Image (cartoon, protein in one colour):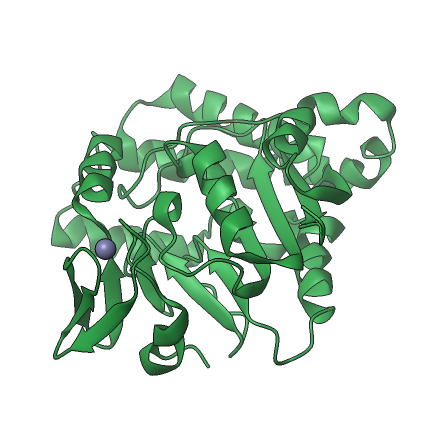
Length: 297
Ligand SMILES: [Zn+2]
């Protein structure tokens, strides 16, 4: 359902939205004649403008580790995984929100995961990312989604919008490719430290709960709320603060932050209580939004 031949009829040129045809290892736009490479069956649908913009947004200080340091780092990662990668740190909403959303679609519904990373939620979920992660079906830029209008029944976009140069443009693109009556699930961090894990794209933005609703105001709001609780905010900031007190060295700082975050982990147990406080949204670690594209717009 998401191999290139199946997707080709609904793909389009990221520059002019013209139809594409396959010629050898390229996709050619029938309108503007641009050529986009296909590598190992994955099309790279980025025009020059996107490439320039991405170049500007690249992490200016990516970690450059030697082979030995990389090996060492992988070993330590296995012994002491980052707490925010652990299911123990996830709130009920973070664990169940997205699976619940996806379970409401029938198996033939076509869903787009924008900024999918390595995640894969099934045969009917098309994985689009700016980077060539495992499981990615289309390498492209969310500011110019290379799909025709109104082709998806659902869209998911989790912890991505803080990494794009212009979240309003990306949301308008998601609105364009979503069918009328289709649903969207998105989440963004709020009180959470700077993170630019791959060096592919910077970390630009944080949004309050109301900022997130404003960003998705073209959709009918179905549900919104805290995804990650306030203790995660405290753990993420305080662990980074304590690590900074000890060292500014890159790899050591990262591991120390892990160590302090695990040490502070018991705070996490307070989140279900604190989530019931009216003002907890003021320092929540992340928010989610579920919306619908109205039929009559
Ligand atoms: Zn074109």
